[in-house]
Length: 94
Image (tube, rainbow, N blue to C red; front, side):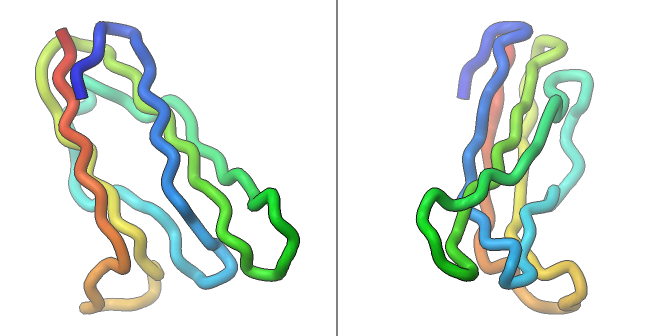
């Protein structure tokens, strides 16, 4: 993903908190290039217990360079278990 300095990137990831899963950082990233500026959960528009919603994350470039934002969908209490999903977002700021 190529971004201009100050141009925010909104990432929307499917999430169902009722299952115990949550999105978290899988690895540190260069915060002199990008920073998380907001995150919120958006509930499903369909009715039903446990319906998936979306985790909205906003990343904003703060300096020129490259960084990779790596996220994983895990149950925080489970140790030694592979993430249910993983996302890597390479970002280049010009």
